[in-house]
Length: 310
Length: 239
Image (cartoon, rainbow over the protein chains, first blue to last red):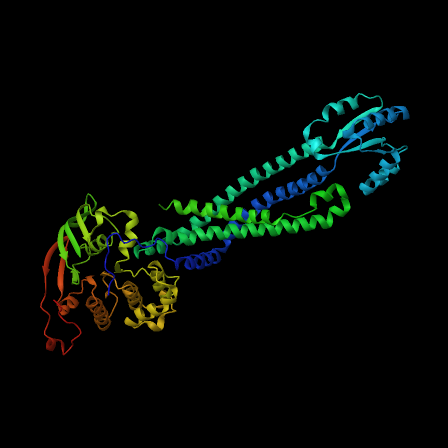
């Protein structure tokens, strides 16, 4: 028997069985228009790769900053011609100030030996010098809380006035600078990645638009047999989302390949200077974030194109 | 079930497809619309399916005034109507089964029931052995029958067919009209546009005749005696 008309009966926009149909159709359309889909996926992958590279650098810098923060240090460098009396005076001053009393004297020879161990590829250059270029210094450990408080600033200014003192270096100032650098890298990454992701979304929108043109007769038939706009648009939206996810996965795989190559080829040759930049890969939440970013760009692109159909 | 009140459809100043057409089709009726090419048959069917709106007058189908229907209600309205298009409108990249399954998806029928329902609909048009063929692998008549199976799969309240026997030989035409008769017996209101006067004469159904967009005649022909048709008893006068 025919289904009786019931005024006000509201059937679901998207029936439950339609989701499987959306996915099957989207996969099939991806396969049929694989060349145009490839362009969209490549665009998403490139933009996320660039964003991922920025994130990777900032991740490693942040990690280094976090390590250095744990051992905040004030270093007092003496002039090469500083006398033992001048060094003793500074030593006495440090001893009298509790915040900086945890100190260690580093001789010129110890400084040279440290440099050689840290920068192995530059040790030959140092050997060719006539004299040891490194000055003696005091290294004072301070608690991170005190370092962050800013209370040390007057004491450091006082130290800088002592005869024989060439420079007073406070790690925290550099950490603060490094933190600013990390922030700049993050912002630059998000701006560059964001602009590229928007461009990729528009590429996806054009690809979906082309697919819709290809299927316009079919869409018309679907409308005539009672398909709602959501049923018609569903596969196109899923197609965009799948392109975005695939782009995200490709970006992560490429980033990991580049990271592994960098660790294998660059890091051993360039010692610790590069080592901290490639210490760890992105953590899982950031990897998931990249793929989710691709998904959002894909959804946005397909939404843009289906929205125009009205 | 279908009411036309002084319906006029103009495409531009010089082209009027329908002119002041008024008629009423009751629930469960089987009505033919006839007339020569360009008489306005297809326009009339398109108005019923809400593919277009009248320039003047009112179209009421199944209690709904189509002029006042909101766009988002149209798909739900069309699900109550089975339409057999003159050009079949089958999705070429889908198999016969997929063409039918898509309708069932739209209607929210669980996928596990699709095969059974599609088989049953195709069996009614004797095409159950072509479930996995693509439309372009079928003859015109076979495509026509798939389109009919698709229109009937949901037991629609109203079944509209635009020249459903146009591509078929007389024997097959009889079979197709028999399928419509059976749908009519199950309760569907049938509106069938054709210019096959022989088919109309044999059916003994109510006829709406169109000429140059005007409703010129409305009658119930007397069917030929069965004996005059050599004992053929394919069509029964239900009216």
